[in-house]
Length: 327
Image 1 (cartoon, rainbow, N blue to C red):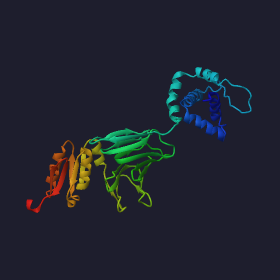
Image 2 (cartoon, helix red, strand yellow):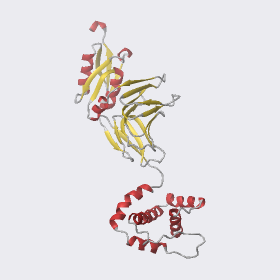
Image 3 (tube, one colour):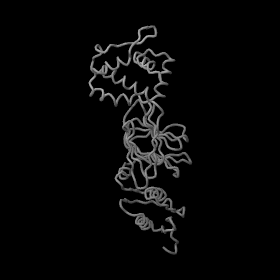
Image 4 (cartoon, rainbow, N blue to C red):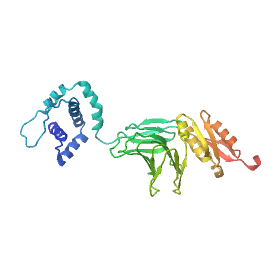
C-alpha cells in the first residue's frame, strides 16, 4: 500500500476535496487493507479529539492541494499532533470512531434456540430479541443506514430501539416482512405451520406478505393470524400473557386448537407427537404448563378431552380418537 498517497487522501477527505476518482481510490484503500483502516482510525482520533478540546489553532489545518509543490511530512505532523492530545480523550473516541468507520463485508450471525430454551439476543442497534424453541435468527454484525433487517425462521419477541429514520424489519423465510420503528411485538412463522401470527404489544407495525397486495397496519394489543393457503387474515384483540409466560419458562394455552398445542409441544420438548385422527385437530385446550413432563401433559390432554387417547409407538406419541365402544 502507498501510505503517503493514502494519507494525502485522508486530508482531502476531511477537507471535502476528493474528486470522484479519488473517492473510489480512497474507498478501495479502506475496503482492501487492514493497515489503511488502522491509519484512518488513528488519524480520526486526532482530528476528532482536537475538535473536542477546541485546540484547532494549536494544530494547524493543512489542506492539501494538487497545485502545491511543498512536501509535507505527514507522519511527523501526526506524531506531533497526537502528542498534545490527552490519552484518556483519545481512548474515549476510539470506540465511536472504530464503530463509525467500520468497513469490509457485512458478517451475518445465526443463533438457534434449542428445545425448551429461550435465547436472549442483543442486536447491534441495541434492540432486544427473545428467540423461542425450534427457531433461528440471522442478523448482521452492523446495520445499514437505510434499514435494520433480521431474518427469522420460527418464533420470537422483538423489542425494537426507536429510530424513525431507519426502520426495523423482521423477514420470515417466505418473504413476509413486519416493519417497525420502535415498538415491541412477536412473530411466529414456522415452515411447517399453515399460518403466520403477529402479536403487537405496543407501537405500530406493518405486516406485508408476498401473498398480499398491500400492507396491513396493526395497533397495540392486537393479534394478526394470516393463512398462507387462502391468503385470508383476522385481527383480534389480545393480551401479551402467552409470550410473557413463555419468557418465564411457562407454556400458556388459552382455548388453543389441539393442532397448535401439539406443534408447540413438539418444539419445546423435542418430541414427535402425531395426531392420527383429523377430527381431533380442532379440539380446544386450555392449560398452564411449567414443570410437567410430556407424559403428564398427555394425561392432562386426555382428561380434558374425553374423546382423545394417547399411546407411545416407538419414538412417537400417537393421539387417536377413542372408539365409541370405549366411552
